[in-house]
Structures are given as C-alpha cells and as structure tokens.
Image (cartoon, rainbow, N blue to C red):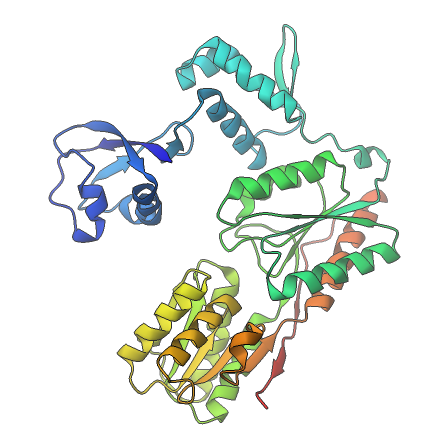
Length: 426
C-alpha cells in the first residue's frame, strides 16, 4: 500500500537529525513544496514522529493536506469527500439538518469533477448519513433517533476495543445481565483501536439501529471529538475502563491509583527496593493513573523517584519484552517490576524466563497473565472488578435513559472508581 504526502517547506533546512533519517531521504530541501508517494513503512514512521516534527525550530517546515492537515490515502477521489463528511459529523461540527457545501464548493475545495462529487454524495446517502433535496442541496440525516420521539427501542449498545482482553467478556456479561433485568437488550460491537474510523462506523451503526444509549470501552488515544455527534444528539453515553480526553460524561473504571499503590506496596513489603515501572503509552489515562499510584507508594517508603526506571510504549508483549531487557541492562540491581497492562506483562515474563532471571525479580501486574506464562513466575495480581464495572455502567446508562424519557434536567457527569482486587502469590 502507498500513501501520498504533501510537504510545504518554509525555507531551506539544515541537515536533519539522524533520528529523522527517513524524512531526510525523501524531502528535497531546495524546493518550496513537494508531493511524494511513500511505502507503508515510511508512512508509519512519519505518523510516529509527526507531532515531534511540527513546530520544531531547527526543522521550520510544515506538512499540509486538505483533509486532515497531514496525509491522505491514495485512492478514489470520491472516497476522500466521504471521509471528510464522516469526520465533520463524527466530531460534532455538522449535526442533523446541517447543509453540506454545494457541489461547486466541493469541486473547488477538492479539485475534482462534478461527477466525482455526485458519486460521493450517493455513497453518503447509501450510508444513511445525508439526504438530498432537489434544488436545495444535501443535508445531514444521521441523528434521526426514534426513541427521541417517545418510541423506545429497548436497545443499548456496547462498543469494545479488544474482545480478547481479560476484563472485557466479564464486563459485558455484567452489563447484559443488568440491562436484561430492566427489559433492555444489548447490541455488542468491536473495533480495532489502530483505526479510529472503525470506532466511528460502529457508533454510527448503533445510532441507525436506534439504541437508547451506548457504553464504550475507549482506546488509549480516544478524545471528545470522536463522540461529538452523540453528544449533539443527546444520546446517553458511559465510558468503561478508560476515559476519553476532554469528554464530560459518565464513566466506570477500576480505582487505578489505589490498585497500583497497593500492588507496589506489596513489592516493597517483599523486600524490593529497585523497582521498574512499565506501562502502555502515557497518553492513556489508565497509564497515568497507575503511575501516580506507583509513585505514591515509593514516596511513602522514602524511595526517590528515578525516571530511568520508568518506561512506556505499545500495549504489546513485544514492547514488554524489550522494555524489561533494557531496564535490566540499565539497572543490574533491579529486583522488582510493576507492569501496568497484561499484554506487556506477558512479554516481561518471556524475557525473564529467556534470561533465566525469573527467580531474581518480583512482579506485580494489572489483570491476569496468560496461564501458560504465569506458571513460570509467581506474581502479585491487581485484578479489575469486571462484572461490577459492567453492572454499574449499565446502571448509570439506564438511569440517564430514564431521566431523559421523563424530561428531567441532566445530572453532571459521574465517575465511579471501583477498588481493584489484589492477589498475592501463593
């Protein structure tokens, strides 16, 4: 797969830092602007460093693109308009009844033909996102919601980001059971966190199926923009497990600070004094909360906060294995590890077993590890009260739905943080 990237250079740039060698290889520095086609691996690297590049004084260049200020996928031009319109709706910029730009405006903005514009509009109509009125134009129709007119569908949606995660199945089961007692049925959908459009499409489909409220497991980088159209439509929404940046809505999570604090204290009680902390990206709310609990326990024990013992990265076993190896090389006296996520913990254990260090380091981790790995190393488990989280999420959502039906004034956002369950090794 190939991607088209547009660069606009402010002025000639000095040789680029070796960290950005892939960019150096593809930018012609003597030109004021250039368009290039790059392979998937180069595109991925550009995505990884895009925020580091923008605004850095020694680079003094910016990347521009019509749709999302950075890049767009090469492909049929009409799909670019569809993507653009979806984005405006999903982020709440265009709500029900909003008029789309005219055909002439879209032709000028996207430098495309009238035929291509009409092809895009037909695609949007097929998705149920817009309607076209002869002589008047095209309008957003997404948020027609029959339950808003007093007709109850008896449906709630649950959107999850990882069907294989230890807590997801039990959480959803708790939600379904609680909802069923109140006469509601549940629609379950999943999405890949690497592709935000998957999440948006699933939310749109739930709205089209007239759910009365939605429970979402947001991804680590979700923010308020992804749910703007739901808020505009006043569809009740509850976040589970994680919070979306900038979004004021009900949420039910584990008490991550308490869990990390108690888990770290257990490591300290076992005699550990040089303890590493490994988590998923610190852009994730859960990662930041767990780091806070970890630091609090160290502070109470009189142990200084050493940033070289703290590392974050991808939510994957591969990152866990590499992070563990680096920490042990950097700190030969490492005697404890706190791991904030179970996929990362699986990689940590693999590295400890590979290096025959499983008896030298004590481990504490959120959630249960794969059973095939946990036999190698007794560990402190910080389990999330999944079923209770699911039940409480359903309770908050159904309360919102009921209050909306009665026409009551909406309550402020509520956040329930339920204590984690700490299990020490036998």
